Length: 300
Image 1 (cartoon, rainbow, N blue to C red):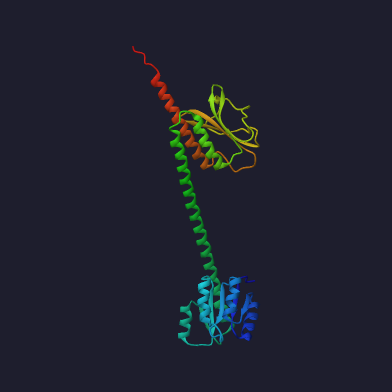
Image 2: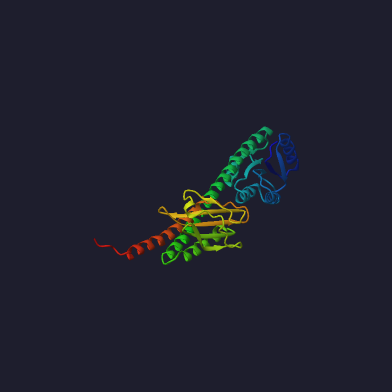
């Protein structure tokens, strides 16, 4: 069964009945309209890949008017013209109005079927090209949006990094980055930890559960080559080392109450993490340089 419906427009009811029944036997789905206005009403409710229309329809818009209206409303609909006007001038005029093909009366049913088959095949190709173009445009638009979002994200992170350069302690740096993290990935709870001997100090946190540092591995055991999973009292949690230049600068815990698609390998999070590590490493380097400057040199 041919599923694509076609629309038959002709003021002669006997001709419409003959064609509808004949084409239906060959598997076509046929809707009818006695005039151009009725045809346009039907087209407003349904897409027809092919419209078969007479040219001479007294008492209203002609077939030429219908062809022009169809092309303006739905360029993917093809018009096949049948008419008793057996002049080349009429055929050329119909094509100029946008007709796909032309069949003269009297005609054989095989002629109509051959033209209809070609028109339906071509309409299918047009539809596929439209879908491909829409898919391509959608992908391009999505990619442009991704690039814009990445640009905005990098700008915000760069602002945080610039602000970090004026800080003299980790607390304000971590609070600013965690506020951004909360809006970006929406963890239920977070903790920012700094190494202190064989333990940790809690520098910043958010979430309803409060600090839960029991069970944390010692800084010396925090493997910097991979992320630790640690629930921290939440159904799902990650303990992520913060390191730069071979120095463990701290650790970050993210706890999620509900199931989440978050993972430490998420490119957006990796970018965020690297910017935070750069900010902490800048503070660490400044402190190291200050300490060296204050250390008296021993003369030989």
